[in-house]
Length: 335
Image (cartoon, rainbow, N blue to C red; front, side, top):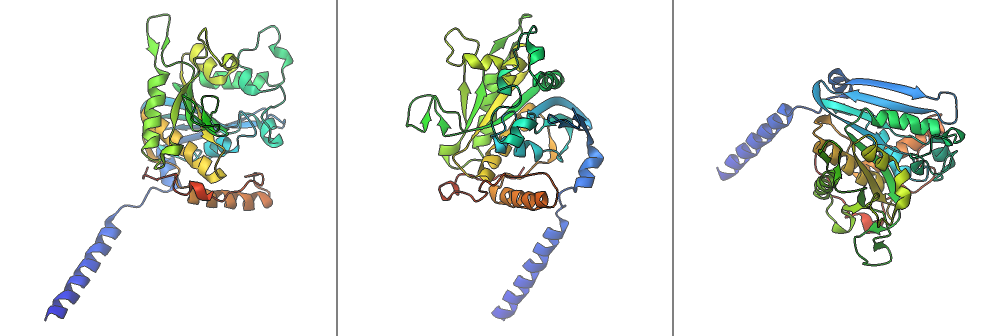
């Protein structure tokens, strides 16, 4: 009799669980997401070495515009590969502008500089000499896109780990990895209003760190105090984010992932940061890219196979295997 009851209980729970599973709605397909979001793309400087594509995604509801740049430095692979992962997202409100490969020449050469030097130092070129720089037209395009945005995110990679005080040779104030870089916490406008990139960066870090289990790889906020009289980063006055903040009055943030990990892990860190920034900005989504570096690794390998058959190049031969020391670095929350 007891065995009979147990069999009935097992059958009941099996059927009940099957019912629950079948009743859970599946995530919307790409086609369904496109039905709710408007997608456009435009290629600038076609048939030249500086050709680049900009992607515009608009949700049905009103909201802010977030602009994401990748690839301003060609040797920071995770930046442009992360930006490309957001091309097919579906958003419920606001607008998303994506420029995954801003500096195509530098990316092709796999180096920091493009035709006209370090592009992230060209945003303050004097009007009298800027026409001599071959990258000026790309910088002008970036400036015109910044004008359309409320928030600007520039994706980067760097070795080691930023810390506000000296901890070790790989973790100190002169390093850049795993930080959200701002030029100043508060920027006061002439009309008496103020922008608070420091608050935005801190909230993005907080959202990101809720998804990152290992504290060694959590994001910190790095204030370069670019415009201050005692700044240690005078060169940043030519940067994209400083221009966006001081000339166009946008909240601007540079996100730096460490290079001290595998490529999929670096992309995962940057994906977490962008997902967090979109949420903090107030953009709601139907679906965002996964933050699981194992899935990202499979995406990269699939891209490499595609490149061999004529698709776009992927990892340039870098390892996609997660470093053993980093296997516990991430915890992935559903998006």
